[in-house]
Image (tube, rainbow, N blue to C red; front, side, top):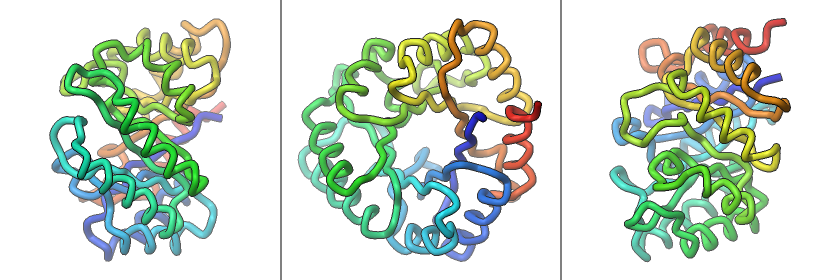
Length: 245
């Protein structure tokens, strides 16, 4: 089975529970709670996380974006401290994982910041996903082993450069390469223009290029929305598009 992860916008608290239920009933395995999608996702409020936890009923994994601002992924000391605090708040609110990333000005992994952030997550028994800062790395393929060593469970990637207008479907070969390099030790989560048709084509292309079947998953945002809100039917279509036999 290929898991579906939904990016869930949660600025409007009135819609959080409704969207969680829609994702759950559409057979999504995980949701990533994000605020301010106009900045490509920032840390959600504690209230949003608490409402999501109540609505999830232990049937879906809840992840919280940990990103204090838009722009680049290079954080100063104050921002790293804020992120550590936000990870602790996410754990207290009942999240099961966090989504984060930190880079140096020359687009390498910021090992110092990541070590601190992951330590807080580990102490709270939270899963860690490295977000699409991965696609901003100068040498992303070489970073996979380091992220495994740091204790990261997942990497979100489109297979193309951060800021590119390409979609994941245009980079199936690169995605298959990442999955092969991960060797099942870290899960590759494919995001970037994911819709039922594109997810199916990507899955077919990866299966043709891979000598061994390693687990990976899909991450979707806009294709799961109707009028800006996550709905059950498009989520279910995504799930069925890659899992129908």
